[in-house]
Length: 401
Image (cartoon, rainbow, N blue to C red):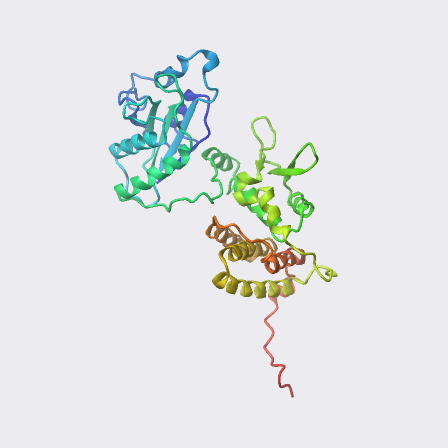
């Protein structure tokens, strides 16, 4: 069961119109209320005598009771709660209890005599509900919803167990930020298979693979076609960066930029710089790019050596090798032939998810793998002849006649 809390909004009526509407592809079926803050909120889905406006005014009443200058600009709280594919279908009564537990856990309506916000839970599909609340309590104060996302996830883990649903592995804070529902809907409208956030994350990871300094990293981002903005201190020091897809625009026609840390925790500029802070310059300097086949053999040898380190080395050293092995996979995905590119991209993505850890990598020990990733990127894709040539027969050199 996944609660997905969206950024606060400013129009209760607009959100209700979407929840009770047909959906963007007529996917909403029988929208109706399953629970509310007092159990008596009007339901525009099942009661023809009421309206969306009546429900909106009821929810917004504590907000409107404040002086205009004291009203929060973003006062609409919204989360969806979705069961996993294969889970049984919950009844309206079960979804109502889920909604009450989620708003209590997140501080939206804590119960036990404490002042809470007004909220309503709408169901328009078998596998999920939406909860909408207004972020002013009945006594005019703001709710204690700090870290509401983590609190909702923790409560969802308990609910899954009690209701016999698929149990999602608890998060440990290392995961990359998931695309929001708005980002997913935007990708669908634009005909994209993935959201802009996901495309940018993959492109930045490939740019990092084997890079040795800021200049090379930013050159790779530009070569990949990304728009790049750098954050510079008054002293002139480079502090960070953000990237955008050229064709991903907001309603004003401006590019939508994502800071590196919002793509993934390890893609902030300070964390990226850790990768090459201990790198040593090539010695002797390479005369030119290594042949793709040779680069792949070198990478295979470096990975083989790394396996021993991961099994037998200290945790921090092993973490560095695991991270650098991810760079090798990213480099292979970037330079692979068309018929294997998709599989390698999936492998690189799966490896990145599996290798997330709180253990801080001891950089410098992973130089052989990072050099292998660099050679793969510099060598490029194998030629068509190399990809189709049959393997050479093995020949012993120890006792030739």
